[in-house]
Length: 260
Ligand code: MF3
Ligand code: CO
Ligand code: CO
Image (cartoon, rainbow, N blue to C red; front, side, top):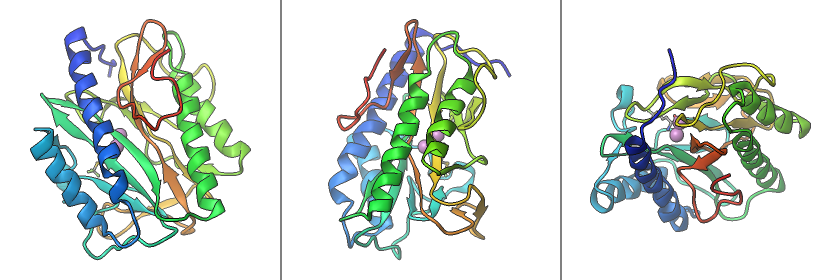
């Protein structure tokens, strides 16, 4: 399928949806402390999306997903289902993935938070995973190839002896939650489609301390590492501009330029 190039009107709506995703992750941060449940984090984000943002949480009922955000703790790679039984404890790490829909457009972003005081191992994994995202974003400009993004992510992860999850990837996004193209987090320079101004897609690397293999639990959503070792993920929604990129889900805690 050809990749849609967004109109300037669509881009403006994606800026708004992306801004709401960023605002949710900034809002939830002070709540991510030992003793809270992932079910409570879901309720807080749900209420904020509906009541404060006048937006719709895309995950809720998406292909049967039962909650409004994904909360993936420790060895959970992605698509963790929030639960009132899952109490966060000191030293845990949790990825919170939010996708508000505003005026028909989706903003998709996630961040891995540290709960209380993390281990040295966890802190390092989270940092290198964010660097992987940033290195992928830095490849985005007109004329670059999709494979350049995956290559940059894979090279950085493997340099640190981490592995890249292959089963899940970034995606085109707009009125459709998961659209073309597929944005792989591994690959070779110069492969894949050429990027053009007006393309919008996510980059969302999942990086494992151990082996790359994953499995889906019987709930048919929760994805875990087969070796039960730690995993992290960070995600932004990115616009290809005439000069480079614009991060549509940019937050105040980001440590990369918003535009190039
Ligand atoms: N937000 C996820 C992504 O980055 C998708 C979650 S789908 C759900 O693509 F159904 F699990 F919510
Ligand atoms: Co996504
Ligand atoms: Co997401």
